[in-house]
Image 1 (cartoon, helix red, strand yellow):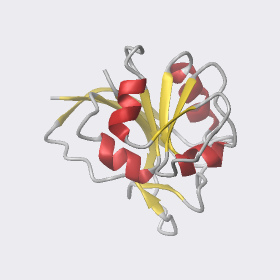
Image 2 (cartoon, one colour; image 1 turned 30 degrees about the vertical axis):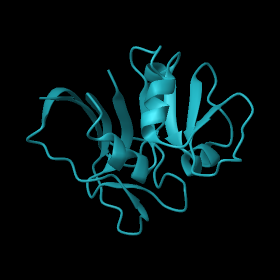
Image 3 (cartoon, helix red, strand yellow; image 1 turned 30 degrees about the horizontal axis):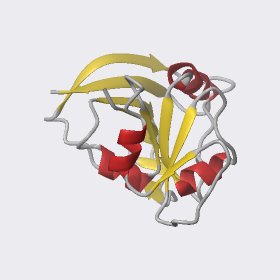
Image 4 (tube, helix red, strand yellow; image 1 turned 180 degrees about the vertical axis):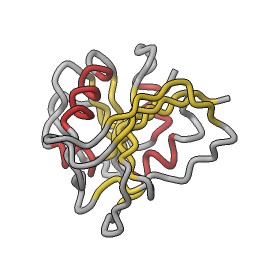
Length: 161
């Protein structure tokens, strides 16, 4: 099973300048909980925005640069090779960025989304359009903005039909 995990605004915005546009501590806590112990697959720019391998996860970085090296990480040059490198994990996670998500949509079994109920017009990176005829919503938790969360948000999981 391959899972795409992402925080996505209502207009599919993901971020700006290689960073998130919003801060949702509950999303980060949930992200850590569900990905812990798994292989996480991401593009080079996403990895560099994190700055280091995520603790207690096997980090697989996709880069076209044949000389790219990061201690403690697996480097591959395609999504297909990344999926192969994660084959011992029953549920690896795709962490982005936008182009990796686009490539992964056809391969993924699960979409694990945090939907931020706001549109960010100044974003420069977007999640690809989702054909909801191919996906069935299997769970949803809705939350209101509060003192630590600037926007309403929902944790929504979809399974490929």
